[in-house]
Image (cartoon, rainbow, N blue to C red; front, side, top):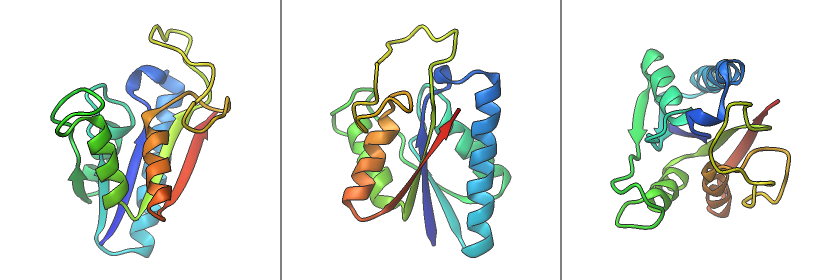
Length: 150
């Protein structure tokens, strides 16, 4: 089994163009993995706000891949199985983690904005909990690849 964690922004951080690009990145990641590995498993956090997690699940199902869904039981950061615990499990159960992010907020974004991704200490992409997950995977010795959509 080869487990691929795919994390990133919720759907509100994408416009039509960047959503299509994100889905193309996900499809390419999963297609490439199936060329070199048997029994590919896609690990997802099943975000309640949609976006990368849900698109990755949908594409993995279309490709008939196995899924390992780490859905939070509480919609808070730190709880019995909140976002923190869910993200730690994504890092733990993935052989590789792909973090898919946008460079900047879409024009219609009305949520909280940050000047930099404080997880990565950079302004080259919008802040994401996916970065925190990627950093945790790196601490476990896992390969992590960031994909920044311009």
